[in-house]
Length: 57
Image 1 (cartoon, one colour):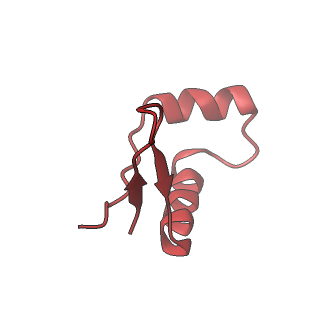
Image 2 (cartoon, rainbow, N blue to C red):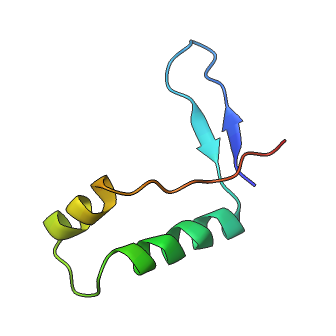
């Protein structure tokens, strides 16, 4: 499960992901973006999609 690490200075937070989290994101990417898509096409497909990563409770 992902863990959000707060920034000391109040800036951007860091998300620490487990191996399973990373593999889940890759699987979602492969499901959403057709093979041999250009980088621009991949951005377009992903801009219309939300990928969730469960947070550690």
